[in-house]
Image (cartoon, rainbow, N blue to C red):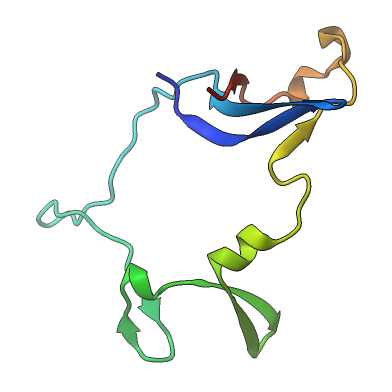
Length: 117
């Protein structure tokens, strides 16, 4: 079953339908892990604080916006959710195009829109 990539709504004028976006293709490529060649142990990426010169846990990591080279403002997930972005969870259809008029080089991965519920 396809996995939901994005949830939101699609609007047709005054009608709004809640949807899920799912991938139309599956990736069957081979993936490799980074390993230490001497003992074949996995090599991991460590989260490291430059100021305190120590490794930090995921629970200690947050988001920050860089105002200048020396000034970073913390941004909380709650603040991002409260931002008034009217288009953040909606897709507005303006027009439909014939498939022949779209250059195939501009088409990336395909997706399906599923109704929510």
